[in-house]
Amino acid sequence: MSATKTYTGSCHCGAVRYEADMDLSGPAITCNCSMCSRMGSVLAFVPQTQFRLLSGEDVLTDYQFNKKVVHHLFCSKCGIRSFARGAMPDGTPIAAVNLRCVDGVDVSTLQTHHYDGKNM
Image (cartoon, rainbow, N blue to C red; front, top):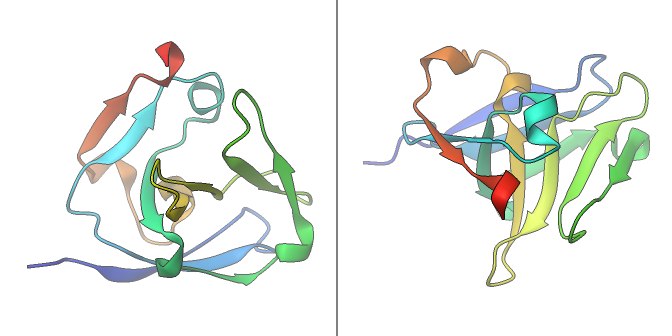
């Protein structure tokens, strides 16, 4: 039985708003790469078809590092990185949703899985 629900989220100032169809019953991802460890992100990955940017495309700034395959997008007004865009190894487009930016989600209640991005 799928626990997929539609969640809404945003940056701090609200210029960037989105919704995503996600199942948060499984583990969310924490990572120790140079970016995630500094940002404190707790991530859920969803197919791009399950992510809808409602507003803010015009205020997003793209940052890429390392292999430059993930678009780390942040609001140019408040600086918050509420989601990123990338692709699975098979090329399927995905969104990495920062669950700390999702309305009504208490990340302390989520099961998490640690990803060792620092050593990849």
